[in-house]
Length: 147
Ligand code: DHK
Image (spheres, rainbow, N blue to C red):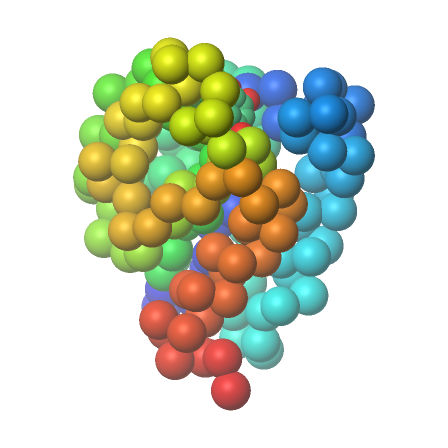
């Protein structure tokens, strides 16, 4: 059964709330995870995982192939560099939503390109931590579990 939503966060997002709060805000990754978990109906699980290592994120995307119905991913800086994460997401059949806390298009040009967007079903940028909740709400609607 695919009954798990994977919430994946990439490098430096363990420092959310402390790192450049003028860009990324004061909420922490724990706040993000609790906000997402609170939205889930019975029968759906959240698997939250953060890593600063590309391979660990890829291994977790592979694990999602077994029991994942959707992936919400903020790949951090790997967004702009990682063909390997794109390839892993291309091997996953469920819904993929890419989230960025900041509006990457308003920032340096190297942040304007995303490999992950070539696979993502939806992309959210610039809504701060609300972007993660919006992604979960969208997935619940897609799955028909939002009543
Ligand atoms: C987070 C990062 O760590 C950056 O490397 C990305 C993204 C933007 C964010 O806005 O959440 O460029």
